[in-house]
Amino acid sequence: MFGMLTRRFPAVLAIVIIGLAHGDARAEPPAAEGAIDASKRAIAEALFDQALEAMKASDYHTACPKFAESQRLAPSAGTSFNLGRCYQVTNRFASAWASFRQAAHIARRDRNDAILGIATTAANTLEPKLAKLIVLVPKVGRADGLQVLRDGVVLSPSLWGVQIPVDAGRNTLEAKAPGYLTWRHTLTIPTEPEVVTVEVPTLKKAPESTAPPAGPRRLAPNATSIPDASRADAAPSDGNTQRTVAYVTGGVGVASLAVGAGLGVHALAINDASMDNCGEPAGLDGPNNCTKEGKALRDEAQQFASGSIALLVAGGVATGFGLTLYLLAPSDDSDTRAPSKSPSAANRASLRVRAMPGGIALQGRW
Image (cartoon, rainbow, N blue to C red; front, side):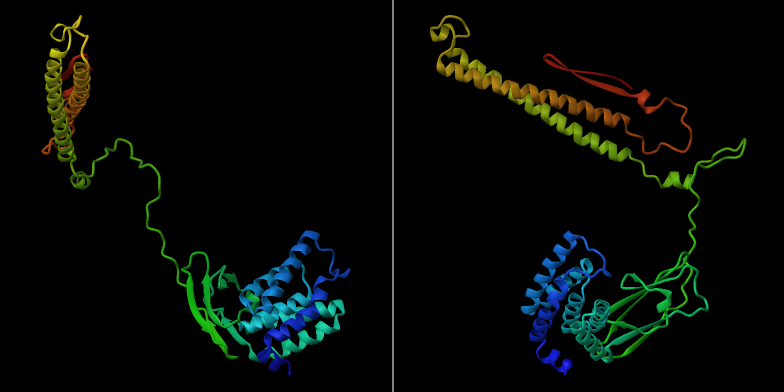
């Protein structure tokens, strides 16, 4: 009768049972249970009430986690039973069966006959519907330190070879041990009351590392370190790259110099044009006294002159830098493996660029 009611009227029955369990879940804990922190009990009550509302609305995916957390904070026969009901209607039969049995255990301890009766009946009704998993771990070839995990949780060796009630759905088994490759296997547990058996194979040894030990190389006394010619040949020369950068940088510098010179010439032309509007030609005293038009021309000439100076300085620096890169670039036909008897490139060629009032100074030797 109980099983038929749970299938046909799950929501109605859940509300009735919650009503019965509510008083149990909220009552003061008996002396055997021990005192529960008041803040935890308050949180547990709030979670229970929220789960109750979700259960009434048939929102079981919200209700189940709240019942579970309420039970963890303040264990109660009523909360455990309602958690089992929530699991049952979402087809998590193994979890529901375990919750019903826990509810019966707490109710028996607390002498709560009402919850004890319905929880025991619920567990007994559900037990024939459980799917079960057997994980076989042969003793032959068993690795030292072997661990078997189901869905990331370690499976105690006492459960190896034993029928374990499990919820339907995907399960992932893992077996691992120090020095061995991890074995993984995914299986699907059916909703029917079947027994699924999986045997853990003998783990394979992990390959040993072939990397040489870290640390500095040590040479025997009087030994001579010989450069690796193959590695020296394989190392590409960066001379071409450096020369390419030199060409680009020098080109930008020359272009800046050209534009700066053009702006300077334009500034001079504008300044010459302002002469007719300043000083004596304009009927004013002093060469720097200008009409409005003359002042505007001189301001414009000053702007072009400032731009010209900036471009000339930047162009000179860029040109000098590009020239330096070019002169210091390694030669393509240089033999990097033989010791050089000539001075280093840094000593063989050098160039300095200095910005000076009214121009740029280049100093160098090569």
